[in-house]
Image 1 (cartoon, rainbow, N blue to C red):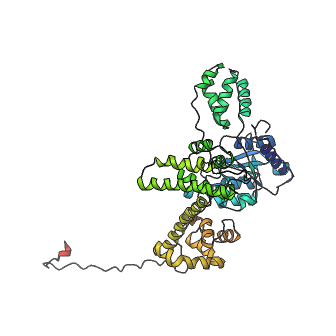
Image 2 (image 1 turned 90 degrees about the vertical axis):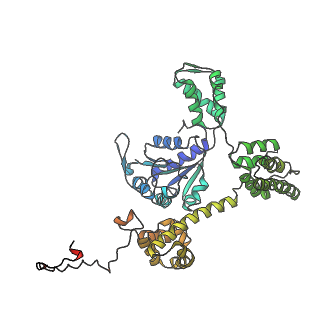
Image 3 (image 1 turned 180 degrees about the vertical axis):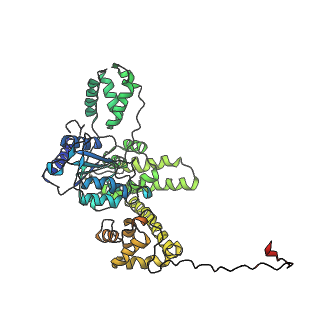
Length: 465
């Protein structure tokens, strides 16, 4: 871990957590590594496993990460002993462990990763081996379960400085036996914008097959697209006292003015604590909103430029006092509620469809007439919840929606465990329920009637042909 670039505090916290496993299972069985892509989160996890002598079980976005897959691979690996890559047996009682790594754990999408979140919660609660979750956006993961916040240790990795990247590039050059101009190293490091992975890729692209790399070769690299996050954009508007810089921040961000105005509107009451600043700020913001309205009415997107100027540089010039807020930049509540509403609508649609199939009615009838009563009954009746899981095929996320609980709540976990479907029904939750009180009846035997030959000369009917 001494070779992990930058983030000494984060690396130290991760190492301390790893050392805690020497005394048995610690209170925080899982750790979440948070940060932008390419800054060394996965490398730090693998370095920890190497220093501790642990094996590694890794799942990333290229793997199937449904609930069954996570239980079969990650959870099974977290409960039992294993072998190293060299074939050595790792016995837990002798300190031998393996590190369970779930990379890009915040990228869980819809039906492709159905049931993944309950499996991750179960993994965090029951694992006997160290677990690392690697995420870019901790909020998108933590909002799905309270256990992610309360039962894991969160460690944030920051982008390394250009000086740290330059130092590492020099070490790589020495190890690969080629000389490189110091100016070329500085050019590559600055062009990476804190992305170590990108810096190494750029270095390899210009040094392949060469013994000397000059700054001329580095200048041939195209400018790497550096996107400013919305947090940086809002910070530049309210706290840098640089109207022109705030306008550039909006242009560098991967968003449009209609989304940016939501961020500015959310944070302005907290950033402008002096009433005069707040009034002037909302005057500028309302003017930006007028321009956005004209975009829709006239379908002329040239007004985006005027709206962007007013919501960034205009709002930045509205501050006349020296009072600045010290709190964190806030994520817009409007976007948060819209995101939750989208997920809820998708889950509600799935619940109505399963109930409609089971009850032989339409999804519209279920939504309007049946679902409200089922919610109330399922909230108070354990047997009814178990029946919904067993007969209707509701999974933990759908049952949590129905009873208005989180997926890791005791009510949901108990009902899913009690109503676990039989193996032949596990693959298809919509399979029909076999009723034992109505046994299949055998088809009655057909009566055989002996045919008598027709008398000679008798007229044939049409059916004889």
